[in-house]
Image (cartoon, rainbow, N blue to C red; front, side, top):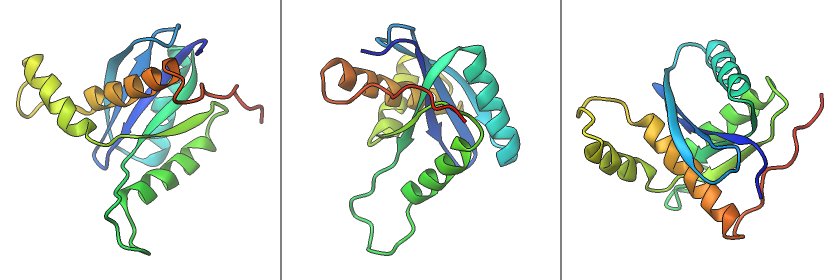
Amino acid sequence: MIHGRLLGIDHGLKRIGLAVSDSSGLVARELSVIHRRSRQEDFAEINRIAAENEVVGIVVGLPLNHMAEPGQHTQADTVRLWVERFSETHTLPVLLWDESLTSEDAREVAIRQKRGVRDPIDDLAARLILQSYLNAVRDGLADPPPQSRVN
């Protein structure tokens, strides 16, 4: 069981999508899209939003590519490095969660919401990543986030 809000993140090279759960950890909703600036500014903005929404943990989508060649740098490597650096800026637990197919699913949701073709869907992808994690915790397929660590 999850006690408190979680922040979902869809990491992208140009934009970062954000979603947040309700305090019972049952439902995720899209929150915002951050247009990337500098790492420092992006981290500060995410941390501000996390504090504003009183989140107790963060779930970051991890793009798993099972077809990658050994030794090949992948987008998953980029996300892991970004999470490592981001984690140095706060004390919240951060979980990586498989984001397979969320972009395609987000496009379908955007069509149903009648979003413009050029409108960003990163917040929808973040919602789908977070909702997938919440469903897995509810179904006993994933552990809830650990408590915040103290620096």
